Amino acid sequence: MSVQRVGVVVHGGRPGAVAAADVVRRWCERQDVGCVAIDVWSQEELRRDAREEVGAAGSPDLIVTLGGDGTFLRGARLAAQNDALVLGVDLGTLGFLTEVPADDVECALDSVHRGQVNVETRLMLTMRASCPLQIPEGMEALLRYGRGPSLPPPSVRPECAVARDWGMALNVTALNDIVLEKLARDRQVSLGVYLAGRLLASYSADAVLVATPTGSTAYSFAAGGPVISPRADAIVFTPVAPHMAFNRSVVAAPDEAVALRVLGHSGRAAVSVDGQLRGVLDPGDWIGVYAAPQRLRVVRLGPTDFYGRLRERMRLTDAPATAEADADITPMWPHTSPPPDDLAHLRLPPLPTHG
Image (cartoon, rainbow, N blue to C red; front, side, top):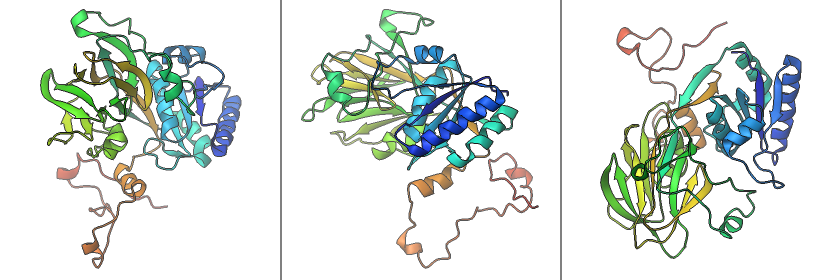
């Protein structure tokens, strides 16, 4: 593909990200490609919703993020509105989403411009709600302290049918997770959790979250959830510190919605999307979380070694009982020749190149 316009989302607090942004701008000038900075951290003005931000940026067809996974999530929110490609440049410390080292950003842009990249698609979440999401007056300033202006409440998706019993379709996309959590430290939130339209259980917990496979290594993982390949299609429900015997995650199919209703005796609950506060629910309110019809398109320069990155980033250690064994972390199969027919359908590391 030939790039026509680049939107740059840069973490201004990282000198390396600022320097890499200059490289992106100079590349765009040489290639006669439009380039616009999209400021998602500004302290000077109110945040806009994703459609407005993308429109003001001239609808770029490539979003380049320069920072860590948090920066990537902010860029992904914009790319999803325009079906744009997103290229993550890695300047973080514990990243699973970004891929390209800062020193290779120019080479990566050349590859994208020539169409010599892989495009990996990722499942995202969207939602309906029983009522518009709002943040009560006075609460926004407290919760956003030190984090910059909050996003505005999500708008209703005009292309979706409106029916009272089905709730309002909100203009929300989440690459990692949608979370319903307590507001008061001394009071848990009580929720009815429904999967595929049926009540699973009523939970009293600090929070419950619905995650994508991409988000399985984020908040869900910290809460004890499973690690799921980002290539899988699934939705993960994970309770956080539940007061009940059943505290396991549930992995649902991508066409099985997860609905969360705030019970009558519960306190209020905050709704967060990819770590950003988007609204507060009262007892009786509900949200329904399900797979978004569109998928995020992520630039990959080559095959992704997700499990190697998992071992490295999580600093996985081997069992003490294996310490005396001959440790071997090379691939199980030797990969010195093409795979046999019964393995030809599997995703395996590429054959080594010689030259």
